[in-house]
Length: 401
Ligand code: HEM
Image (cartoon, rainbow, N blue to C red):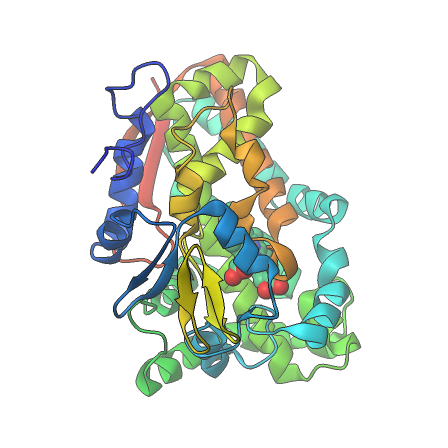
């Protein structure tokens, strides 16, 4: 087995060395999924049937072709996201919908995710805190970036879904992670007991969002859903879905991005020359792939890279393998550019929140770079999060060198 296949991508300059960012990235992913990560990392074929898991797709082109083919592959059949999430969130939360209803809901919600709108929302909600973050780092404070980003992402998503801002505090975030942490690739559905517990967490959360629905406020997700004629419970399901999708991914990615930059020496480089910031963010998304796997259910027989799949088969789209096949983190060569943001999906379900994610990533990264520009920073402590759906750090403490 080659080292690249084991996930220890090699650098361009020294083919014998393990890329510096890979060691911690390996640890983060392995700590989150101690059994499944090593299992999937051993997959060498573009498409492979793995007992108890499903048909694993790890080639970028095949993976994209699945995402673009809604005739044969769906998010609503057996083993799909709908199977998993509908008992907890209800039937109308985008990620478990297909066809005309899905299209209509996305169209209605789209203005809430327009780049201009989310940039302003992000600045209004966390801009001042990001400025303070720069000052705190400059002043020599040790800052846990995970806690910091959790706070920011929570505040922004709360504003968007009409939650009281203080609701998504540490405790609630932990409870939300408790729900997503129940998900295992080897377990396509929640047990009845787990679904009941998950619904209780989400009910508690959405109690506070009902007002936004009842007011019909057009600048929140529940308000828009009401305008579309969706019921209150459906809108509350969407609140749960947006909190689930919109916080953990960012709390995973931003600290991992800063860690990759620090581990590769790019933090200092970017601080003094911002021209490759966009490429570095894209490369960071490629090598970390915060949403590592997507699921689809087969509705019509098909052949994928020589493997026949049949109705009812579950496809495990291993985006993290497809993304990292293009090598180590490298903002200069920027292999991410050819992947068309595969880390955000493709086709009808392409991440609706991508502009919101990019706005927050840009703001926080700039805050850290502004501090680094004045005095170099280092990671003084870090721990990977155990057994979580979205791999990430439990803490990542940054301070002046
Ligand atoms: C770095 C951060 C993020 C990453 C890597 C990411 C990744 C993804 C991916 C891969 C999908 C497609 C899943 C599939 O096709 O099965 C997706 C869908 C989605 N994402 Fe994100 N996401 C991020 C942040 C966000 C944020 C901040 C929000 C805000 C609410 C969000 C909301 C959504 C929604 C609602 C969908 C479902 C869209 C649909 O089914 O039509 N995401 N995301």
